[in-house]
Image (cartoon, rainbow, N blue to C red; front, side, top):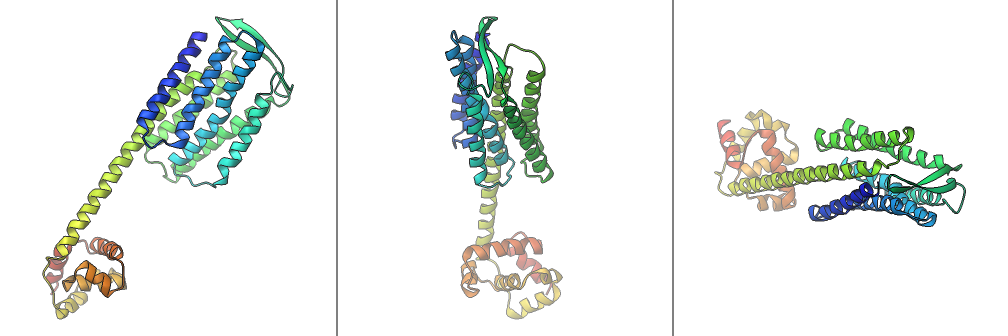
Length: 322
C-alpha cells in the first residue's frame, strides 16, 4: 500500500513541475490547488510509512492541510473560470472557516473532539489509523458538502447565464466536481483500506492541465482576432485620407434620400457628414471636440449600421443616392 501512496506522491510532484512549465502567468488558485494536492498525497504517503502513533498523527495532519484547503482553492478557481463575480471578502471568510476546520480536524491525540481514540494498524504493507470519531467529526462532512454544493451551484449558474467559454469547458469542470463527489461518497459508505481520493486528485490535475491549455488556446485565438480587427480598422482609417470628397449640396441630398442614415444618432450623422466631405479622422476629432479613439469607435459603428466596409465604400453608396 505504501508503494501506491508513494507513486501518487511522485506523480503529484511531476504534475506540479509540469504546471510551472505550462502556466507562465502563474494562475494563483490553480497553483495553490496543485500544491494542496501534493501536500495531501505527501501526508498519505508519510502515514503509510508511520511506525509510531505520534508520527502517524503528524502525517494525518499534513494530509488534512491539503484536504481542508483543496475545496477552497477549487471553488475559487471555478469562480474565475466561470467568470462569476463575487465579493472580495469571500476568500477571507472561506479561508477563516478553513483554518477553524483544520484546527478541529488535526486535534486528534490532543483533544477528543474530532477523534475520541486513535490507534495504529499495519495492513497490506502500510500503516493506517484506527479511529473512533468524536462529536465534531460530522462538522468536516458539512464543510465538504457546503463546498460541493457551492461548486455545483456555480456551474449551473454559469451554464444558465452562458458565462463559460464553451460547453467543453463546462463538461470538464462537471466531470472534476462530480467525480470527486462520487469518490467521496464511495469512501463514506464502503469499507476500504486505501484513500481513493489521492488517485482522484491526480486525475483532476491532468484534467485541469488539459482544461487550462484549452482556455489559454481560446484566449490566444481571441487576442489574435482582436489584433486582426484592429489592423483592419487601421486600414479602413487610412482609406479615409484618399477617398473622394462630396460637396455640401451632395451630402444634403444623400441625407434626404438614404433612409439608413436616419437610424444613426445625431453624433454619428455629424461624423458621416465630415467623412463624406473628405475630412480626416484627426480633423473630425478636433472639430467635434472628441478624442481620436472616440471618433474611431463611432466610425466603426457607422460602418456596421450603414453596411459598408470602409470609407470608399461609404462614398460609393452615398453617390448612388444622388
